Length: 398
Image 1 (cartoon, rainbow, N blue to C red):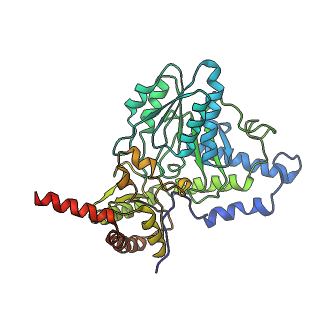
Image 2: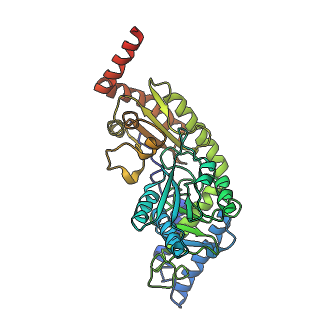
Image 3: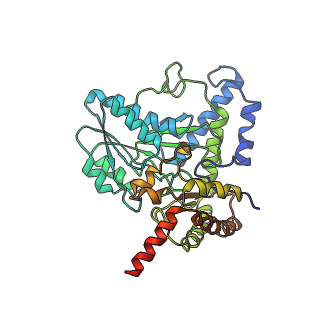
């Protein structure tokens, strides 16, 4: 039995190259970057060098626009709460987002609603794409910020970020994008794409867990996240995660340098897997087939439960998911699949497979052999599948 890790949208293995670059800052250059002595000053210089390199790779005009955080969820929270609280005194109390954002955005919006802010949740349609016209039509005079994710974490659909950014600039409204899934897989230029704030994290691109960033364009007013120290230009107090920052920088650089070759390889694997799985009766691909992350496959199989499918996959050596890892304990169907219009009974039978540099064509071969057998096995025990087949027979008899 093969062992295949196919849940890279949840997290990725730490790259040996990245780990090697991090190690000196865990074992040798461990000084506090706020200290005056050499070991601390060296750590500080390393942070600023990484900040400059990351800014360049994201198309930021100034390195001071990069703020290091603990990851994507923290960055998302800070972007929305920081901007909304800063602009509240100016009467800006309206937020625009989409119905299928990561819960780091949706739950933050719900928290802000309790404070009196109003939120417009845009539809995403069957193909999982936000329409720029819907964004423009939703903008009001009191809109503080628009937050639309760059690529969806469950179905992998890539959004028209440049068009949305241009609309926000036209109306003088701040634009934030959660690029946690997109960074390293798409060409990002925050200046050219009119992105005012951007969230990303290291562990989705073979970097370490616990380190991410928030890009904040110069001139954007945002409240402090953590008080108590001068770190991150007084915005986020706390001793910096030097090794994590080095890892984030290294992982992003490697991802960008290898992007074209990797994306071409993953897209080929993805499309072959989708075509093979669509041969299964009453299966469907979720999200747009073209505007999609290269390593993302999200399928639904009618008549079975996603949880049973995942457990059987695990028994066959395949690590997969039915949606966001952050909600894996929930028995409710994915809010993303419901947002694109799937009924509950179909959304329940979902499976997400996501691939990285570590996966191979042989992995695809194995999955294509195993999944149809598992689906047939589960359907043979499913009252829902029996009901579907009886209904089919009745319709044919008419």
